[in-house]
Image 1 (cartoon, rainbow, N blue to C red):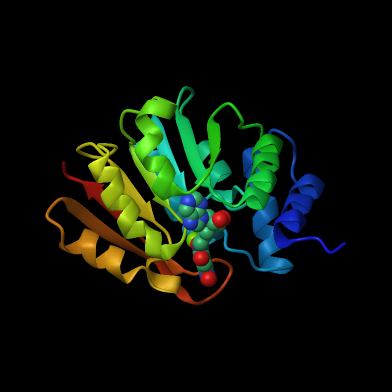
Image 2 (tube, protein in one colour):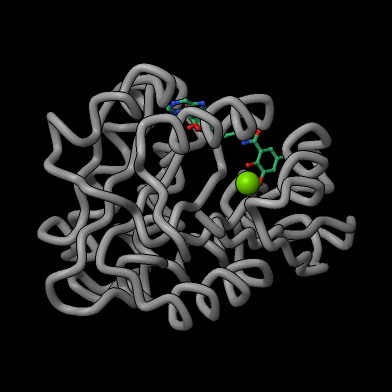
Length: 214
Ligand SMILES: O=C(NC/C=C/[C@H]1O[C@@H](n2cnc3cncnc32)[C@H](O)[C@@H]1O)c1cc([N+](=O)[O-])cc(O)c1O
Ligand SMILES: [Mg+2]
């Protein structure tokens, strides 16, 4: 039977990356997706922006919306301090199965909790079910029309504190116009655009970093 793209990405990790070496997992996926077949990972160019924001925030609690194959999950978790935790939400069970194996290959199971379900349903349960107070960093990389509703939902559920950082992928391509308009015009956010390119291409894309002002 025909394999799926996520299965082929996992195969590239198991073939080319070293168990327990997160950066080799990141490198293996980037090499596969740049040379064999494109996939919607944040990628190596925007990944450097992600790395710099993670290092600057040095978060104890991270929420990722949209795991896909776990590329950015592993990339973020590889930079977290010892007791920090990353919760990543993924509602496609097939993608979740692949991501769990990519995370395991990287040896990051202890830092990452992959929760299967829709962000709209899970965000209101974060405090009671996962013992989370607030998130220091949120990485938005799921369906682009969910960025704004989920941001409003995180505010309503008290999951953001003064200084919480939202980092959003794809604000140009495919684009998240309503989200961008909201965070750039709201007095409750301080926003900054990082110009880059769509993963593995020369197409313009960028990431928006927005600090919640409380
Ligand atoms: O469409 C893109 N990303 C959507 C990502 C979607 C991923 O997040 C999950 N998801 C969605 N809503 C969810 C709600 N709750 C949980 N998981 C959810 C989906 O099951 C998928 O694993 C995209 C597209 C391009 N592109 O060039 O076309 C480039 C990119 O970098 C992209 O991120
Ligand atoms: Mg993306």
